[in-house]
Image (tube, rainbow, N blue to C red):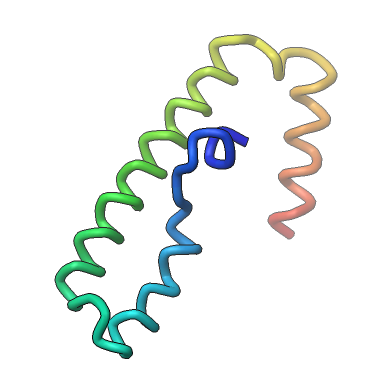
Length: 76
């Protein structure tokens, strides 16, 4: 939701920049620089969100058990 509200970009969406490179609207180095910035920003954001969830205690008790169960089933 923060990506939508803040107008940020996800790395997966920026993979379409390859089309702009093919159409010579941007250079490969511009694309790679953008990918690097977006990837690092997405990594930082996901780590911060994980820390917020862990330290908020929202997954303590039944909610945490349920989340772990769902995660285990998705991995199988």
